Image 1 (cartoon, helix red, strand yellow):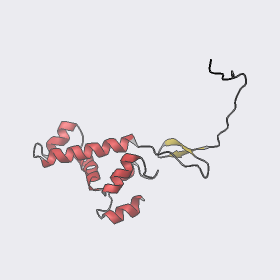
Image 2 (cartoon, one colour):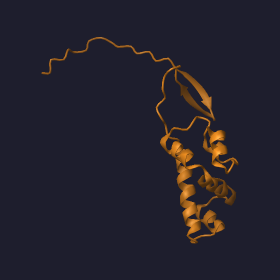
Image 3 (cartoon, helix red, strand yellow):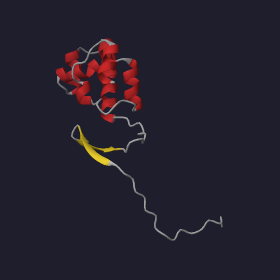
Image 4 (spheres, one colour):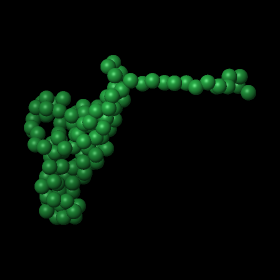
Amino acid sequence: MSGALPTTGTITLQVPFKVAKRGGRKEIVLPEGASPTPRTDNTLVKALARAFRWKRMLESGAFTSAELAARESIAPSYMTRVLRLTLLAPDIVEAILDGRHGPEVTLARMLEPFPLDWDEQRCQFG
């Protein structure tokens, strides 16, 4: 035996938090002073991966943009918006992949037009 005492009582743990709606989904809001753990947005990471994969496919000359959109069964306009993600500043891409981006950085917002200048992107996306 390890000499540990058996647990006979009940332990109650209270954690103060709030639930807030953001972008149509519910999120836990931590109390002041609590540091959040980084969480990657899988939808955004997938979109980044697709964008860079599609970019490589287009640059290789294997497909035209219309052929690639047809092959992926997506609208050409959607493919264009996703491909724009390859123009993000490298540190913004890294922050998204590491889950260090703010809650305002969502796929819907990233698919909207954004500045090509990396400094302006940093100001827009924090």
